[in-house]
Amino acid sequence: MAQIQIKNVAKTFGAYQALHSIDLTIADQEFMVLLGASGCGKTTLLRIIAGLESATTGEVWIGERRVDHLPPRDRGIAMVFQNYAVFPHLTVFENIGFGLRMQKMPEAEVKRRVERTATLMHIEQLLKRYSGELSGGQRQRVAVARALAMEPDVILMDEPLSNLDALLRLEMRAELKGVLAESKTTAIYVTHDQVEAMSLADRISVMHQGHIVQSASPIEVYRNPAARFVASFIGNPPMNFLPATPAGGGTWTVAGEHFQGPKTDAAGLDFAIRPEDVTPSETGLPATVRLVEPLGAHLLVTFAVDGHPFRAVLDSERVIQPGERMRLAPQKGRIRWFHPETTQAVS
Image 1 (tube, rainbow, N blue to C red):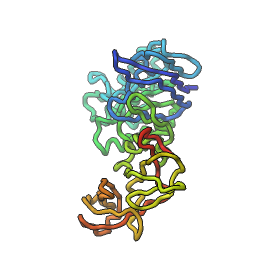
Image 2 (tube, rainbow, N blue to C red):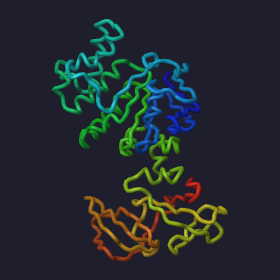
Image 3 (cartoon, one colour):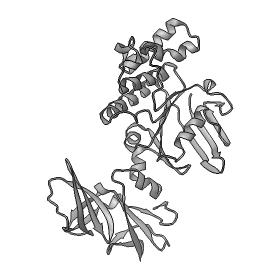
Image 4 (tube, helix red, strand yellow):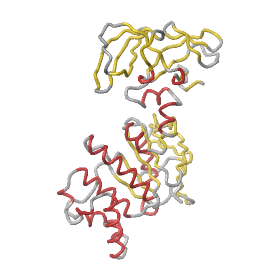
């Protein structure tokens, strides 16, 4: 079993604290994505799990073994890097089998594993070619196949698709998820791309300034963000926020309109709604159109609501002009509330 437990892991670089007391359990065969902006600590955490970086405090367990004192080769892991790290002077077969031969594995077993993983990654026809002759997408497949050939307990991936163009990323995402499910390997995947995270993950851990802000399923992170940072980071365009003042009895005033919300003694809250969860209506938030951006099947419309920017995703068949005034009705079940000082969700 390759359950991973990260217990109270912290990391400092001089006076800079990169990670703050991280606690995270990743289930056997789970696909976990660490998602966050550059500098949030996600790659540092991955490198600590890999053994490429040591934690200042804390423990890392894989299965029943504590591994934070072990070198990378003894942790039962394989890693796929952003820059592929394939050898251009070796054939695809030799690249995939490189780690196996370093372990002095019998040649028959090397051949079996190389051919199996090459078939999984749809590159079996490329085994005799040199990796320097391959496209970026093909080299990325070789890198993943090389990691899988080691039959690791855990596979770690550090933004492995970021160097591919959009179409190749889409293709590789679909293949990668299927291959890892078939290989029954526990996976940790680092990215700043929320689309990758949402499409690949069994669970997403959103990181911000060295903390895990929320760890949950993709749909839970999207629909029920635990903090304002998550709400603003996940989604394109992100959630809209408007100030709300109490009107008593759990009723809140937003842009002159009343909405039922949490019963709390807070002097104010942030009202939040996703752009796709509002519709033009006879009643609702008073809005003035500022910008209309056609996006094929939809329009992305930027409004001004009570002096605040507010975006809505509307049907492209609507004719909307800058300066037009209308009302926008939020779906009641989609409204979220955040405390303006703690930035945490309020229910």
